[in-house]
Image 1 (cartoon, helix red, strand yellow):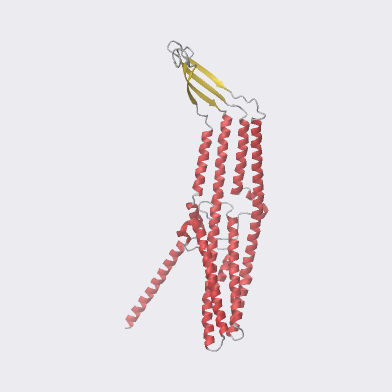
Image 2 (cartoon, rainbow, N blue to C red):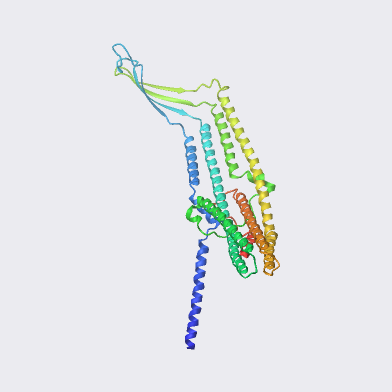
Length: 450
């Protein structure tokens, strides 16, 4: 009997260890299947149809650049010269000594500099397409990050409210028991139930926001990926720009780079218009066949455009191209100024948001929790009423909700600043999976509340 007990105990221990091992394996597989921000950005980049479209545009422009450096295609001409239309030789191509059947080849000889400039113009188009692709990549990574972070913090906000809703259910049971025992009034029961309904309404509103957040994330990574559990949040306390050097840093921003390539294209157009003031010559060689009684002939000719009014034609074209180049430069400068102002505003809001998140974490949230605990202790000790407990509970929930909403807003601004410039295809910023002290601390408040 003693040995049977030992064997039974050993079997239980083995079963316990097996259960622990299975639970560890399941938790490890769940962690491996979690969707990090880096994963979401990588999937979004892989699913994008805009980036392959930009690749096609780059290829097109470079193919055109290669074609533009070649000479124009020669022209093959056929014709009949001096064909009689009346008399005895009418429409006869062999009797009249002036009638000739002609075949000719004409070649326009475009200057080497002009062909080079045409090629450069299309190369600038290719560079612009590259800048547009970088801007699109940055936008994909930014918008994916915003959608991921929105869902991440909304899930934590909902978890905090759901935990409060569960506590309110226990409060209803306690107030009903107190009422039946003659230690409380019916108003306490109604107040507790009303608080529960308000929390359920808050959960309903959060569920709606979560569905919208998943829909926004699904736009970038697909429906299946948008339903995956999320991994840990990225580090949110560093951005790639600094307030004292915005002009130098934002001059390389993809959007400004696109406008800079517009300036380069306009300047290439100016140089090409200047080159067009040198006319291109055309050469023609023709073989002319006459009737059997007459000799065949060969003709050679040169065609030269007469730019007799350069002042009102070619010069005006150059002036027009220069004006467009000045316009492109002005647009680029104006966009840079606006971008600097926008990013400076974002930096100010992001820094203010981080400061406020720390204040909520270190002061406001702990104070709201202490107020709730104090009101609850007074109520249990018969020195306070349930209304004070419910008011304190509502205040704590509101403070936590404001803290998490502030984290959402701050994270959104971080994403806009962090992805001003595109990462590589893997989109892996340094320490992407580590938690920031400020945001991590605010999250720990929710964890304690659970």
